[in-house]
Every structure is written in structure tokens, then in C-alpha cells.
Length: 333
View 1: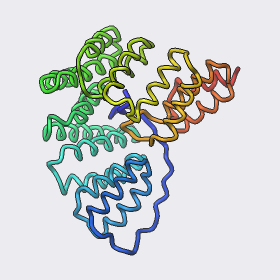
View 2: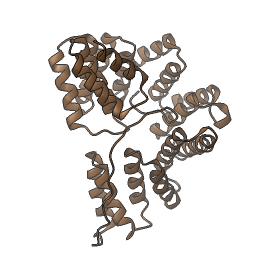
View 3: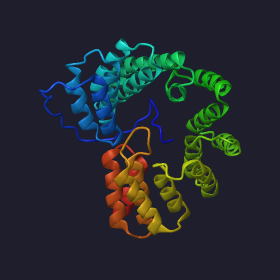
View 4: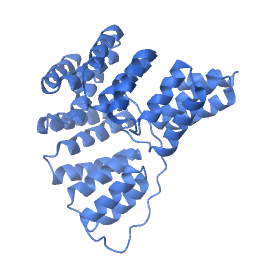
């Protein structure tokens, strides 16, 4: 799924060059956060960091300012700095579910970057923050999914385990059945129980959800299962809700590559996605768009272009073994 697992590797390498703090005090913390939020939403995370860092000296007790600063550092993969800002935001606003969830995400990334022994400490902190986020707001579905995903991946010694994940899935199904089913389908996919996962996602496909994110997650599942017909069905349902959602270019492009139809349109859609949609942890990653462009070019026999796209993908996600293999294949043609 396009949301990155809290305990699974996802690398988004982005350059970061902090500017000197402005000498002129900002007008207000609210105005500063609004300005920085616009930069953040546009994918200009370094600019958001510059604005917020300068303002933090004047408004050290603004929880929202530190929250957005932590999110910006997170997108830049500056996870230690993200943790510092998010911990400060939690200290200032301890009852905000979304801040605990983001702090848990940042702790999870630190766990991935740490050696075996220190990773355990970061992992326990990750679990604790996800639990706090869900406890504070059970309707925070992002936190619910992060907690379940963590427990599905992590060993029992750091709070994970199938029994805990399934317990939380059942609790989520009582709050929102479709969200719970998505979590169940993802859990079954993680556990490589493909036939059971397929049945769950087919049931979701027969639901009447009005949330576009549901259909995009279903589309991604069936794409990964190489089922282009059901992927198209899910995307048609998504388009009825919002055909102009910025994620649609990515999914339409990957569908056309999967179907081996209309390569010119597939290329245009994926290139447009890369050019207009920021690389963000809650959106389909640019590394994946480059990978699908590579698959397209490889299918057309344009191997040098395929290799270039695979290299671009690996620059953002160096640990992706399937792309490493694809690059070797393209280079040998």
C-alpha cells in the first residue's frame, strides 16, 4: 500500500540545505504556520523548515509549529530532528492523537536506521506512541493502521505479534468496518496469505464506500496481484468520487503499464505525476513512479531509458531488490 509501513524500509532521499534564521521576527505563529503549510503541501520541505526554524526562536511554545516542523524534517528523512520537534509538540499538546502518531512514525524510522540492539529501544517507543495515538482518538484511522501494521511486522519482544494485530483489526472493524477490512486485507498480504487477502479485497470492492482512499488502496492491491480488471474496476469507483485527485495519474499510468495498452498515455501520466505531485510519505512514492516508467520502457524494448528510470528509482529507494534486478536485466539487453 502506498502508506509506508512503520517497521518496513522505505527510503525517500531528498537534499536538505538549511538557511540562516531570519533576523526579522515573524508577525505571528499562526501566520508562520500557514505560510510553512503552503510550502509543505507543495513539497518544498526545506523552505518550510527554514520558515519554522526561524519562527521557533520567537514562538517556542507553539505546539502546531513544532508539529509541522517535525513533519517537514520527516519528509526530508532528517529523522533525529523530526523526533526532537515532534517530542516538543507532544510535550506541549499531549492529548493530540495525530502528533503521537507522527512521533511513532519517526521513532520507527530511527529503528530502521539503528543497529540491532538500539533498534529494540526505538521500536518499543514506536509501539508506545501508536498505542497512545489510538487511545486518544480511536477514529484516527491512520494511527489505527500504523499500529496494526507495526504489530503485523514487529516481533512480540517489541510489542508486535499476530494476536495483537488481529485484536486491533477486530476493534477497528467495530468502529469502521471498511477500514477494518482494509487492515485485515493488508495483514493477510503481509503474512503472504494471498487467497484470503484476495477474498477480503473483493468484498471491499462490493461495498459502497464514498472515500476515494479506499478505492485507491483496493486498486493497488489488485495491481500487485496482476489483476488489471479488478484494478480498473476500483479506479472507476475512485474516479466517480474525484477523477482529478492528484493520485489518479499515478494509478491510471500503472494500470496502463500493467495492461500493456496505450503506452504513450501511460508515459504521459507517470511523467506528469512526477512533475506535479510532491514526493510525500502519504502519496505513491516517486521511486515507484520511476519503477513503473522503467517497466514501460522495458516492455517497449527501450532498454537504455528503462535503465535510467530504474536508476532514478534506486536513488530514492536503494534497498528495492526487484528494481536492482530490473536494472541489471535492462543493462544486459
